[in-house]
Length: 520
Image 1: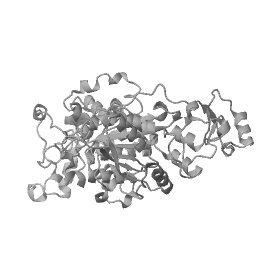
Image 2 (image 1 turned 90 degrees about the vertical axis):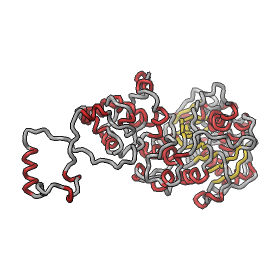
Image 3 (image 1 turned 120 degrees about the vertical axis):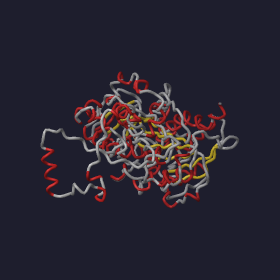
């Protein structure tokens, strides 16, 4: 066990249930922490340390107990089971009668002593389980770290399951001078990725920034990168794009002049050109129960996130930007997202930050929430974008009904039923029908969905969105060439990364990575 939570808790005679309530976690989660079956976030670790009147390093294995406290009590002898049979005194043979005498002694008035741990090998202190978070703050006191957080009742003291993911968004890679905590990871222990220098010279100075557009879809990331790099007065070069969907590759080729590679699982790392920046809007998939124990090669194999991890491991780009649905943060009770962050930080040695962004707050009239994960080899401090005040409205996106082909209009019966069930307060508006048949309308669109019913969204309750309108809601420019059927472009728009949302993140992140050295 690499932490001392149970030892310090019992030394202070605090019951497990009482301590769990004091810290603000469930007793089940606390047991998992004490048994090293779960990894503590920085907020949980700080509250545990404060409740134990100790430092984070002491609780989670970074330092030994103070000499003064150790000398106050005699060192207990090792239990007989921990002593090899050849070294046991001959006068105390392990017999049934001897065991009976011990049980009688145990039933006496003498208080029971806690079973001590067997001594560890002299290999130095284990890195703390919270290494990706705590090492960057190790020079701060608990009071400095926790200052003001008690006032935020909506974050620190909300339900533990929500708090574990939502309280702290900025996270850090492990200390580069020590091995990471996943001893079974070949990436960390054999290839020494934890020793990556934390101060690098920008290799892109004087040339184009090269990027790999993985799971590229119809090019949402590429448009966002093109716009952001132009604002930075930097050139960009897409060295490779990849997507398994054939119609999406057709659309990508029509707009960028290159056909993406197909199945990433057949793409060998040695065949990928060197690049500086990885983009990936990857599918959300769960991981097996072994995910909190093993290295990434075991816990994520078979998922498409493994392909991202493999490519980051083998190619070591300077930075990455990943995008997924908001539900990724709560998928499989948060385990999936926890593993993803641990792999990126502990196994691969990247500094990582993340945030859930809404396309509606990034300049387009579509409520579409996506989690964006950014990472770099060097530490960075991300300042996420504030909501856009003067974004596009539905009037900027929608075409005139007179110019819309009649095939996009719903049948008179559908329109009649919708308008009998609902009256909108807004014009123009997008009417939304959920799976229960409830109808609502807003001065913006609900999230486009690739697999939604044909009449899921209706403009003013009367007609479906045209392909161009769907592309505009995703932030694609009007010169985007539509090279596939209406059915396919509807699917592709529903799967696309919103250009404006990604661009807002890139505008804050890329200068931190690719202009840092030039600025000072």
